[in-house]
Image 1 (spheres, rainbow, N blue to C red):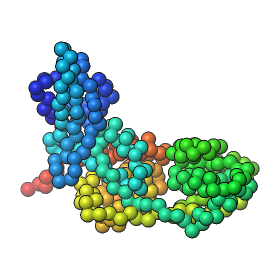
Image 2: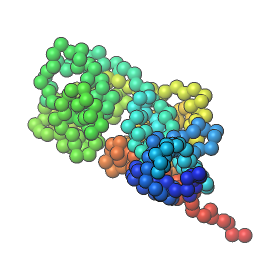
Image 3: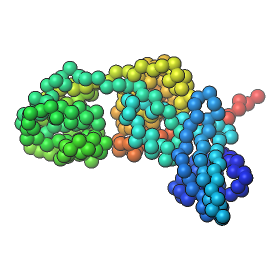
Image 4: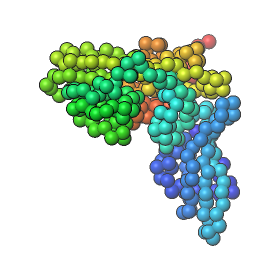
Amino acid sequence: MYYAEVNPIKTLLVKRYDSLILWRKIGGCEIQGPNGTELLDKPRVVEPGEKRMIGFHISVLSSNHARSRLVLTCQLSSREWPLVGLTRERGKNDKLAKLLGDRGIPYKELPCIEFVDGDDRPQLAGLLQGEWDWVVVTSPEAAMVLSEELLKADSRGQWKVASVGKATADVLRDKGISVSFTPSRATAEDLCKELPDPAGKVLFPASKLASETVFDRLSERGFSVSRINTYSTEPAQWDEEQKKSSEAVDIVAVGSPSALKGWIAQTGRVPHTTACIGGTSAKASKKQGVEGVFFPENPGVEGWVKSVEEACEHLRARQRAPSSKKAD
């Protein structure tokens, strides 16, 4: 249960009703009162080693229009709200972080991977000038590499783009590349099953660590697939502060198997609970021996956030449950 000290003002009304509902849901905090109260800032998390608290800056407009400020701070009395570790490469956690912040879920960004060029990247610009029926793109990073190499090409061949899902398609469209096909679910298996006939030539610029699913499944359907490894991932290197920060993390948000490997490499331990972007990362978590694995049926950031919420509720329920006692 959360408690709040709101003196000298006894009651407050938050105009951001969505935030009010969230606070009631996750903390049982009742905030109500006269008109004129405005929520200014999002929740924030203090550094490890301090008491973990979620604070709002509240601006109050009184009846005589005199503006004053106070900080409304809510703290878990029994246990801190679970802290989520964000493991994508630096600069790629922003969307998930915003959605978590909107829900009042504290997080710490701890990038576990970094991208490096693949051996085949120098070939891509030339290949994009050729004739293909499809260019298949299965990750946002592959989309970024494609857009960068397309700028280097002297001309563009006649080909259509198939994207594995919305996040990848958004990157492509932001770079001015139209997307002709996305599958019903954001998985490589569904893309391969649903890519329209007739079977033709496919260029597959991929991560060196990507599985052979796209190559194998499309080849089975009669497509001629040319795979090139345009990038790869390596474990990110942490400093001592990051290693210390990781000790406070309750839930690890996993966006790829390589991010999970990076977490284990840096911390020296398998996390107890992971919230995964999709089934591939969930499968990797289970293979590593993670006890609590949460993931959405449909991969994507929106489903990922729901998985984080489920993991939080699971840990909170365990904390609230009475501990079992052995019989004397």
